[in-house]
Structures are given as C-alpha cells and as structure tokens.
Length: 128
Image (cartoon, rainbow, N blue to C red; front, side, top):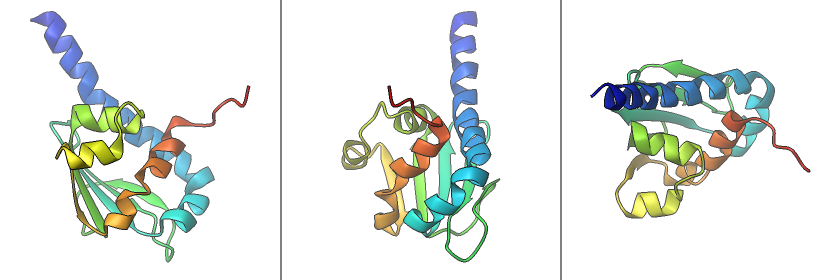
C-alpha cells in the first residue's frame, strides 16, 4: 500500500510540475507561442491536486498561465495520468481524441496547436 501511495502522490505532482515548467517558459517563449496559437485554453485535469488551469495566449494580452477556471476558447478535459503522457509526448493527441481519452470543447483548431504549448514546457532540445 505504501508503494501504491508513493506512486499515486508522484503522479499527482507530475501535472503540477508540467504546468510550473510551462509557466516558467512563458516569459521567454510566450510571445512566439502567442503568435502561433492565438487563443485561450482551459485545462480540466481530473484527479489532479490542482485540476483547473487557464492559459492565455490571445493576441491581445500578455501570455499567462493561472490556476482556476475561466471561460476559454478551448476547454480540454483529461485525466491527470493521461495529461502527463500527452504533455511528455508519450501519447498521440489525435488518437487520444478519437478514443475519448481527451475531450475538447470550443475551437478545435486550437487543440491542434497543443503540442506547441507542451513543447515549451519541455525546454530547449539539444541539436546534437
């Protein structure tokens, strides 16, 4: 039971770590991301300690990521475990949508740009 609890707590903190990395990357990469995404995204990560996040990449403001629920151009609902897989590139976004693993509501075109959002959270990649 202790091993299961440890794994569960570690999994819970992973989505928060991804959102923290995304928030930390926004000052440097936000303007470029804002130009390519151009909208707002609400994340509802079920089973997470902090389930609701709002990412503002609209072209009319400063790029930001905040905790909480707000009206957005796109709302993404996904489990914590699957969010981590999706953000880390371990799950194909199109297949996840088709299988109902991820639910989207609103401007579907923004959903196609989510990988760009997750890529900045991963940080720069080596070109070697």
